Length: 157
Image 1 (spheres, rainbow, N blue to C red):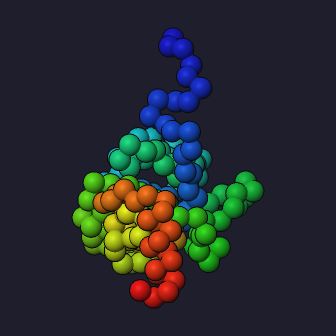
Image 2 (image 1 turned 60 degrees about the vertical axis):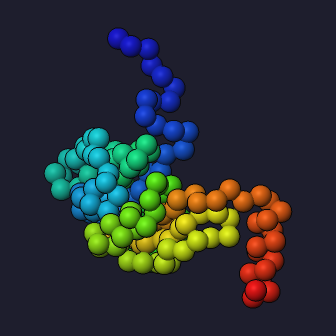
């Protein structure tokens, strides 16, 4: 048997784990919106809810599960009236993925624009209540230039 790795292959130090209402539908949406690949899915004993699933988006794994209030689980964003947590996704072509996500059913939370820190970035909210910032680094901006741009923005120039 192979040696156990402390961080499983394919995972990074931080891996988001999302609780949603209807994880099966979320997995299907993430496939359409972000090109996710389903890696695993374990169904709950009730046969309706997803106990745990892993999907890969780009080179990152995202864990998903349905709400399980009877097990002390917290509700997903829809049950909480939204989520303060956003996922920031770097891709080669932010405009293309942004368009794909909107066409799949995401709502535009912030139109895609060139940002002062050098990213081309926009944000969408998925049908399950999570916001995804989609970005492509377009320019390396020094700290001094970033400060200058923030100051100029605050003065309206």
